Image 1 (cartoon, rainbow over the protein chains, first blue to last red):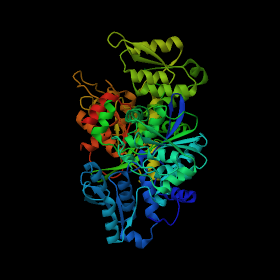
Image 2 (image 1 turned 180 degrees about the vertical axis):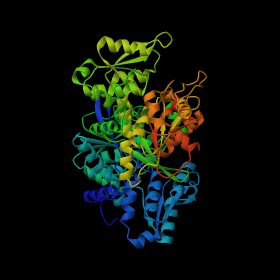
Image 3 (image 1 turned 60 degrees about the vertical axis):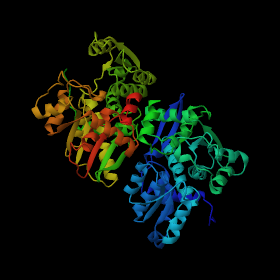
Image 4 (image 1 turned 90 degrees about the vertical axis):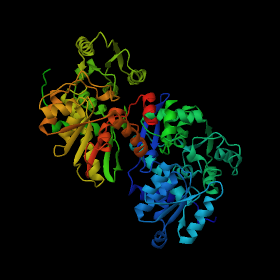
Length: 320
Length: 320
């Protein structure tokens, strides 16, 4: 795919202004880990339960009237689908989401409730990319990837602009180290653009730490065929994008991996200490701090990126 | 007990100003129930996980330097204890909390972590009121009740001032009907003073609806000896106070009761729709709307009053 442009810091600032006009900032909470104050940005409290609403809004508002009239297509069974559906509804655009036939009913229903059309496919025999591309072409609609897109990256970065302003207002100064969950790297790359002078660590589930390995190697490595099962469905990307990788690589970002047990413990900590529901993939950055994978220091900012849980699985996690 | 004064609307406004100077407003979320937009005030997101921090701050800041130096005593095994401990620590005051020996370790630890002294007693043979009164007298400390106090009522009412301002800023207009969990009635009475022109319904667990029965009877009735077990530990008051009853009675407030199953369903709804951890007692107002105990109308404001859950019990609720 050829891109007309790279994501930029100016684009992140533009996205932040557009998003501030329609959504209140998500709350920033302070709590202590082993006596050290840490700031938590609760993107789980966005209307659709994840930061994805930011990139979706920045992308769709960048379309002209003719493009908006032709609608938008996305493939996702998760938070990106809901972000696109939410933004499209707010703009009066038609949204079509390509989702596997066996997607959880709760996710399909949430997407339908936002007014999107859901097109099913068979995971075993069909390609969602192919279906989405054909749909977009037939309708003249815009296909919006979940992270491999400059607008999406800039939009997600608006969370960093917001958090830095909130920390400044709270007298906490600049963030010194931002710790962020990483799937395709859209949120991480956006934050890196938003906070170019801040140390950053991206966090992935064990075995799915392709961004960490890529950043160490200096080129993009894919997830191994032997990657273990993970509860972090929102971070299960097979391969990051050159756009996200390049931003993180240029800024010398490093990555760490956390175990499933560490992620579950972080979800429980969020219940007891912050009274927040955090999905597994949204809890990995917190897990890295609690598990001692990253040294604690003053001024840390942790992204709690999403809160869409499967109720039964979540109950099992809380039961320990 | 003789009170020097009644709680007033001016006192609520004063409390709101004092609290705005030290705490950001708790978030106000909008969601839909059966297609009707409803506003939710998430007091569960206060630093100690409940609105109790408001009354505690208003009460302790009203003490002069000499009284502050002698410290504060409270009896509670729950949210009031943590509210008092939090406010006392912030003011550099000594706080003593009288708590049963068999209180959950998580609550005792949270209170100790806030720097308070915990004095245990035996539920079967000792009176917590007596122990607290003796301690307060011996030390010259101020005994702060959890709801039977004009400052506490005014402080809790600051949540209503905040919520009304947030609804106005969001273009939602004045709240038309505020629905609030009720134990001793401190939060409800404070909100009634804050929002004198707004219809109010207080919500209690079935069998613990002494405020509803009192308001209907026109005099204070106690909880029956045959009251069933309830998960709503924070609403298990045997008898409301003349102070709270009088405020609600003068404003023609009515009450409804909800079942344990309705409360559990509301806790699950809060996870899936708001990504919030709400304790049973904090979820009863939402439960009354979801269960059809109160008719839905535009402009409703629902208090989610606390989020301190026992992890194991919470896991069972989420498992259904």
